[in-house]
Length: 435
Image 1 (tube, rainbow, N blue to C red):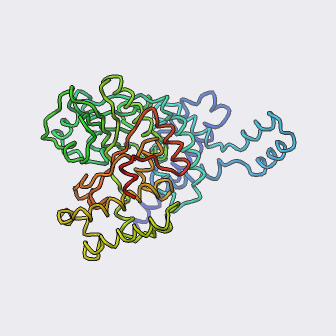
Image 2 (cartoon, rainbow, N blue to C red; image 1 turned 90 degrees about the vertical axis):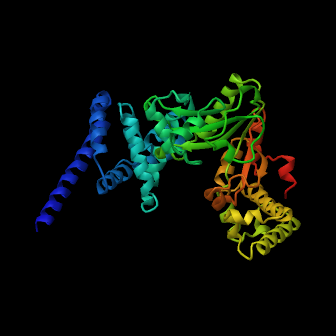
Image 3 (cartoon, one colour; image 1 turned 45 degrees about the vertical axis):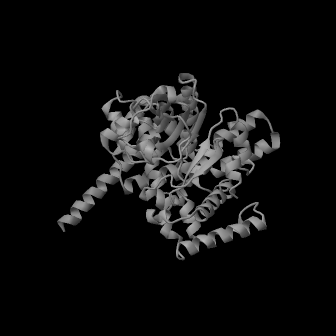
């Protein structure tokens, strides 16, 4: 009985908190709120941050339903614009069709702590979308606003080095998503003079990296990641720097999912490094192929690949069949290092051919490898596929140990980007001959 009373009391308290937040939102959207938005928004941010669980569900339901545009008013304005086709009726239509929640989020964003609050809200919203598809319009509005607020023109690129604040360095260790940083010694090596780390920051989120990229300065294009992240390796002298290899890029803020920042960061870093180190001639990546193993293990239908010729599809079937024989009928053995020690030249060539097919034919499609789509859409060229590029357990599981070099030719990125949009992957002669 006592537990039931406590639960009821907590429920009532939670309902009061939700009502207070909704009342604050209405007040912020009111005429009075327009002139006193900073003070009202500050109090509302504090109340929103106190919401949790079902309380957030209730608040999202309010944003999604109560603050949506009036369908009849939108229809009337659309009819007026269709009839008159003038600027005044178009403006009226746009203003009527815009959900009131967008203005609420704008006013929240103006107050200190508002931007961080909105990002926290979106993290919670994204976690609910699969089970609550009715929140999709709210998510679309949040993404629309965040894309504007986190435009690269508003961001500051900053180099992270060993002299950066300890709190920032801890965040770099925590958020590294591609090649785990094994403590402070590992991080220190990654920040030596032949390594670089750059991050984007937003004025409203000081000290919070949004995304960062790690770069190795080398004499030649790398074929394996091991030497790049070896914390016991000796730093290279600057007179040998000829290549800048981007080997890791990590997003730090889940609330910014879908907001494109990585492409601008890579290009900005390349331009800065070119100014700092004029002898750099090549800008490339050493990238994983996270979807390759899963694709090959599902027995893909090569003949169904877009644009593939029947003869090529037949050759690919033979390559996969050859590998199956070598692997005893199960390609999953290639997810273990010992299997690669037994591969002959013909076996390795078959694997490389299948990997090239995956990258060349599937990358322009929505089902293509996400890393490949990211770099190719940025205007990079598929330069080289490297066997045994990452023999770590994760590298073997994802891509049978293969890695890729994407080349960023700063004078050709726009042309390569346009080519990719038309469904064609810019590739080197070496990659082209693999298929």
